[in-house]
Image 1 (tube, rainbow, N blue to C red):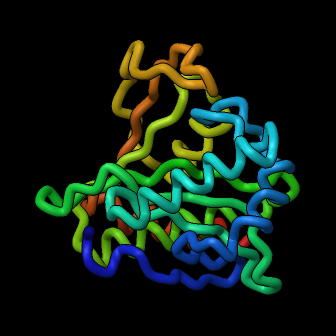
Image 2: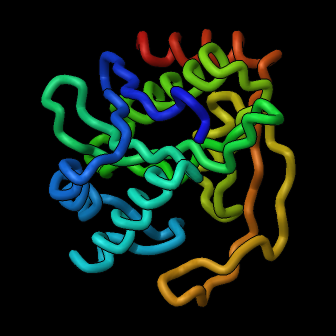
Length: 197
C-alpha cells in the first residue's frame, strides 16, 4: 500500500472518496446511465454484473493493489461515477489513473475535469510522482480527446494489448498517454482554466 494515497479528495464540483460498501446502491444507479462500450466489462448489464465489478474494485482497494474511488457530486453527495489509482510504483514515483467513468448526464459538467485535477494534484504534489500515465482503448475517440485536452502526451499504441469484455472475447489495442512532473504546472493551469469557464 502506498501510504496516504487512499484519502478523501474534496473539490467544488466533485468529491473523490475511497470506495466503500455504502457507495454500492448509488453507484449502481449511476452505472445504469453510463456507456460501458469501451470498458473491460459491462457493469450495467445486471445487478449481479455490477456487484461483481463493485466487489472486485473493493478487493483491489483492501489489498492495496489499487486505490478505487467513488466520484460524488460535491453538493448532494450522490455517487456519479468512479475512478482509480492503479499500476502503483512508489519505488519509481509513478502510477496510472484509470477505470474512470461518469454517468452520461454528468458528461461535460466539469466533473471529469475536476476529478483529474484532484487526482493529479494528489499524485504530483502530495506523493512526489514524476509520472502519471493513462491508457484507453485505441478506438475510444472520446477518451483520447479528453486525455489530449488535459494535455497528456500520447506515447503510442500497445497492439493486441489485452482481451476485454465479459467473456474476454474482444481484443483491445491500448493507447498510452502520460504527464510528467515537468509538465504538471502547465496541465494544472489548463485544468483550472477549464474549470473556471
